[in-house]
Length: 162
Image 1 (cartoon, rainbow, N blue to C red):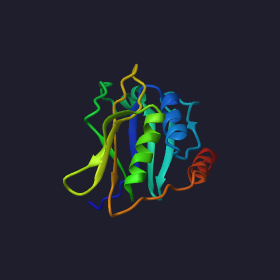
Image 2 (image 1 turned 180 degrees about the horizontal axis):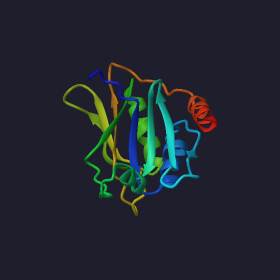
Image 3 (image 1 turned 135 degrees about the vertical axis):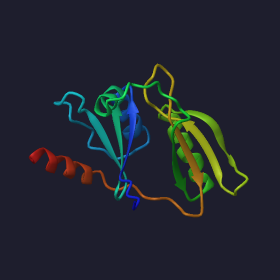
């Protein structure tokens, strides 16, 4: 298999709240919620970088689509990393996540492998619980810039024209 990951889908209990967190809180570009005219179709896509998108989809819709039972959220089942190029950027991203509603699990600090790392639990909207982990690290690989939001809007427009 040639690795071609292009979409990361997170199951959420409150789609509107998740969009507010990722769009308004973290600044990820999105055309907003689409597919509301279809049963189990409402979803929001966010451009992360060219060729990689984040989707937030209601947990019940993902369960319906897969034919699997709707599971209980578990914050240790998945971790997303956001790499930046300086310790100041780690602090800034952690502060931005916290102001957007994330809970800081581990404040940013130096690690034994030479990075600075902080961990926050991100939003899925389960009565105050915030499953999902956002790792923010300073590495020598630098920061991968976000792709412009209009690319997803263009894709959504083309899809709706079919």
